[in-house]
Image (cartoon, rainbow, N blue to C red):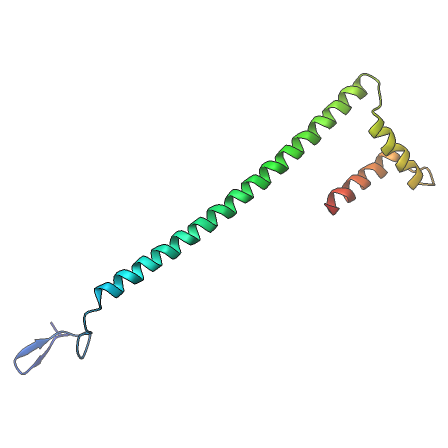
Length: 120
């Protein structure tokens, strides 16, 4: 009770001084609360829209990658049977034209794949 002070026979507690603030108008308080709730719902709706768009774009990317994987599987299967797919032939002839010194086509192909992936 060291913090309490005796003034004119009454014990005063430390803390807020002066008059108490007038009661806040309940209607105004309720309206502010409603407005805040509306804004919160609007933000939530925008956030969900953004996330749905993000999910759909990722799903499209997954489908494209699955198609690419299937194409590579078919190429491997064809090469296992001793056939060279026309797409690979086109890549090989394109690589040979780009390397006039007759460098390793495998190394050139890897470099081309790296550079093509970096551009997209």
